[in-house]
Every structure is written in structure tokens, then in C-alpha cells.
Amino acid sequence: MQYKTEPSEKSTVKIVMTFDKAEWDEANQKAYVRTRGKYAVNGFRKGKAPKHVIELNYGKGVFYEDALTDLYNDHFEQIVEKEKENFTVVGQPQLSVDDIGEEGATLTAVVPVKPEVKLGAYKGIKVKKAEYNVSDGQVDAELSRLQERNSRLVDVEGRAAENGDTATIDFSGSVNGEKFAGGTAENYALVLGSGSFIPGFEEQVVGMNIGESKDINVKFPEDYQAEELKGKDAVFAVTLHKLQHKELPEINDEFIKDAAGSESVEAYKKETREKLEKQANERAEAETENNLVKAVSDNAEVEIPDAMVESEMDSMVGAAEYRLGMQYGGMRLADYLRYMGTDVATFREGYREQAKQNVKSRLVVEAIVKAEGVKAEESEIDAKIEELAKAANKPLEEYKKDVTASQREYIADEVVVNKLFALLKKENILEVAAPAEEEAAAEKPAKKPAAKKTAKKPAAKAEQPEKAE
Image (cartoon, rainbow, N blue to C red; front, side):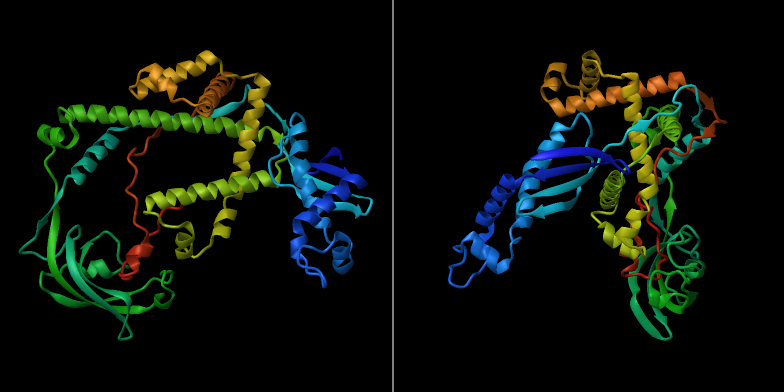
């Protein structure tokens, strides 16, 4: 087998494989032996007909496709391995047959390869340095959240329903006098003022007394998720059974000791500020590093093959599906997207530009690492492992026994990345923008997807789960 390689368009390499008559005849014979059982020929038991008889009945080229497949499988990976110093394949090849006949065959594989990066300026450029401050208000907000988490519901008597109350109600909805699926519930706990039901519903429960029944008139929004209810006027027969209001514990040292394990309110605030400042610094550091990568990437030139972008998009969709499943108890991405009125193909396409940026950033970072000769020394890897052992509260020698070669390689990559960012921060001009007040560090509780809620209670306004990014 003879082969030659030549650069092709958009970061691809063309590999042309030529097989002479002897190689071609041998491949056809192997294909015949492997596949002859598929062909029925009169006068012969299946699998017993001679090769030339099958060719007379099915055509001279009956075994060509299988022979080419065998030759490709036998030689392609060997060629890629032999040429690994010249290019790195990053996707599946496109195959074409240039010549085929009794005297031999020529097969061409066009493969996407890791592209060359033309670095631009990556030193001496101005880059925004992120900074976030922690305010007293944020510390107080954390204290309020702790208070909320330890609140309890207390029965209300002798007054009408107010916003903030939890109202236990029965409701039955109808449109044009006909009940609709999922519009009925009993003993449903509704927090008044939460906006979880369609506009106008909760406002009309406010003012009701325990034991009272009334009809509530509402109109479904034009963008309501149930097509048959969009923009429709509806009547809900509502009965109020019970009212409860939230009772918050008093914030004092005793409460803090029980709820948070801190010695006092002041100690809790000090610990909370330190935690928020650590989170703020980590966020600012990550944002600054992202700004650095984007700046040096924008200055570089690279022709990214489509295969790398498509692969990155697949990874991003996979990560989104994993997060969605974790957030919503195993919910499938396809089901979530169907509920949102779209599909996986459209959702995936929405990642294309970000995928291009991600791939370019990685390629540029690799190119800078190579240009600067950034390496992880064995002593640096060992120091990182020692740090991890301390964090795991394990003796170093015991911890090192569990560190595999691939884990050590991962640690080495982390060391390289850290050294690279240290270099970029040192060699570039980090301009501090006006400090922004750090947002509350605690994330919002994950909402339940509206699909589950409205399946039996479509009176509720459709919640919009956060987009899985």
C-alpha cells in the first residue's frame, strides 16, 4: 500500500491510499470468504458458491465495498499513528473512492485535524480585572435566609387572608362552563403573593375568610403553556379551608448557636463575611482569567474544523442534560425542551457560537503554553498532591497510593494552567473597573419544573426553569 498526505481546506488533511493489484485481489478474496454466506446462487448451497460464480450472478464488483472497508480498517489507523508528529486527527474522515477496478483501487480520506494557531499579542495588552465587594446588606441577607429556613407556619384565626399567608384551598376551574383537565385540586397550599398562579387568582383569594367559598374570574395569559387555554376566560370555584402565616424566630445568640453552630450573632456575621469574600474573590479571579483568555484569543487567528465545533456542541448539550437531570430529579432534556416548545436540535444549535469560542480558547491556550515552554515539574506535581492529601486529611504516602497515572497527568495539566495564568497576569495590564457589589453568594433554590406542577394544577402560572447552559 502506498499513501500520501497533503493539506486540504479548513484544517483538514487529505490521505490518499493506493492499493496495487496483489493487495486488491487479496482484499477481495478475504471479502468473499467472509461474506459469501449472504449470496444465494442456483445449484449451490448458500455459502458454497465459488467466487467467480457469485461475481457472474451479482456483478464483478460485488465484493469491492467490503474489500475497501477491510483495507481502510487495516491501514488508516496505522497511517494516523505514523503521521502523528505532522498532524492530529480530531474527527471522523470523509471517504471517497478515486479509482477502482480489477487492477487496484485508490481510496481518499479527508480528515479534520487540529489546526495551527497564529498567535497575536498576548503580552502587554490591557485586560479588565474583575473585583467584587461584599456589603453589610449581603451579610444581613444571609442572616435573613437562615431565619427564613428556621421559620414555622402558625394557624391564623379571626382575620381574612393576606398576602404572605399560606392558604389551604379547594379549587375547580372551568372555561365556558366546562371543566378542563388538571384544573381541580383539593387542600392545595398556596402562598398568597407568590405569583405561582395565573394573574388575578391570588389577589382574589386575599380578603377571603376561613370557610368561605367564592367564584374567582381570571383570564389565562396569551402565552400560557396549554394551547387550549391561551387567552381564555375562566371561573374557579374556590373554598378556603385554612390560613397560616410564617413566624420567624428571633435573631439572638441562642438562635445562632442552634441554627448555625456559631458562638454569637456577631461571630456568625464575621464567618459569613469571610465566606462571601472568599466566594467573591474566587468569582473575580475566574472572571479575570476568562477576560485574559478572551483577549488573547481575540488577537489570535485559527481556522477551526467543523468537527471540533460539533464535538464541543455535543459535550455542551451532554453537560446541560446532566445538570438538568440533577436539578430536576432525572428529567430528560428532550422532555424539558418539548415543554419549552423547542427541540434538542434547535437547543444544540444555540451553542454553536459559544462552542467555537471554547474551542478557539483552548487551542490558543495550548499554543501559548507551547510557545512559552510552560511545563509542570515533578516537584510541582508532588507539591500539589501533598496539598490534596492535606485537604483530604490523609497521610501523604497513603494518598499517593491512590493517585493513578491519569490522575497525575490531570494534576500536571492543572499545574500548567495555573502557571500560564500567573504568566499572563504578570505580562499584561490588568485594569480594575469600578468595584461591583458582590451578589448574594447563596444560589436560589432550584425551582420545580412547571411541567410537573401544571400537570394537575394548570391554574398555576407556568414557571420558567432556568435555562440549562
